[in-house]
Image (cartoon, rainbow, N blue to C red; front, top):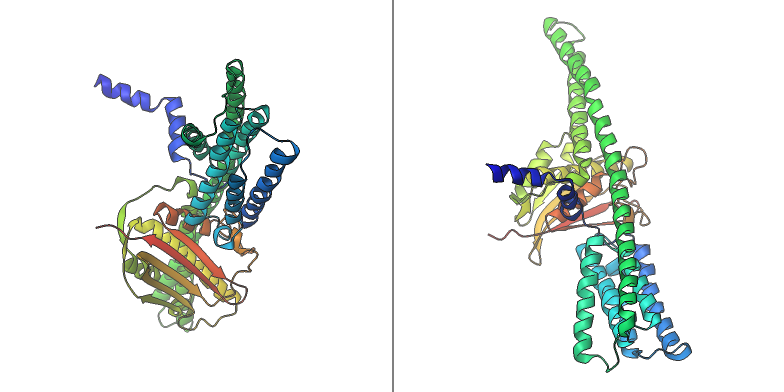
Length: 434
């Protein structure tokens, strides 16, 4: 009992709670402030920077060691971030992996190698300090910390086996170098942690306010539901009244509106839990998920309900949460119906199509609509929290929620669209291993 109480007390220690919050619960941000433009400019900076400094350190201000082959290879790595396949969707797993690998090779690995090969010269001591600061400004501090350690160790190992025969850092300068590195690393870590906390606090505060506002709408909706019940009760008391059919129709419309609004509130509250999404390993059938979500969606009109078409090419199972993925489909269906309404659609059958299938050993759920579509300039931002292409009613959380849920299942979500030609949202998921 004593050990159990000690363990419980230890688990609630402020330091351990902080470590759990920062190291485990805080969402990873492999690319800070992601956007296609930012990735393109980073790629250009890498490409031109290596060409420029390769010339400076070899011709203008020559250093003891410079390697043209390494500079060319590093420049080509920068070009990868400038390609549309990599930078068009910063949230995709491929982009995040390529970006992480490129900055890891470019910064801690290459810079540590050059520092060692130049015997820790003043130029490369300063460059290493700047490298640490840059690394913590482009990726999550946990990834930067792990990358700095592993990159430095890899460079040291390569230097031991293949490095040039040069003298090391002078013994009387090693403590100086250690203090410079410690100062640069500590400053970068503190700045990165404070920036991450500030971003999360702002988002959490806004999401909590939106959740409270959504909950506040329950009271007037309950009153509206009671009014609908009262109308139906009065109609039952006077069944022969000439206005009975009209009153019945109004009562049914009012009750349908209340159900729809309550459903929308549930969606907003779920979206507002963007940063507190628990992870699940429930086995989910894609076909059943889609069919159930479409059947349960509270369409405000029969025409909207009839315009939805489900196509099951191949069913598949994946590991996630049925409730969370139902919310994902609700968000996508709601956006598609808004897009169809904006296009003055008559909601023909198949104007909103949801397909389930397989491609290259991955499951796919594709939601296609023939609505207004999304302007090309807006596509890179639509998964960002609080960004909405629907300026009138959108809050910009739905697609951010969708992306978070899909990524927590190991998948990715992409969109293809153009103004006035509709949109195609594709969810790709790893198949559950049986």
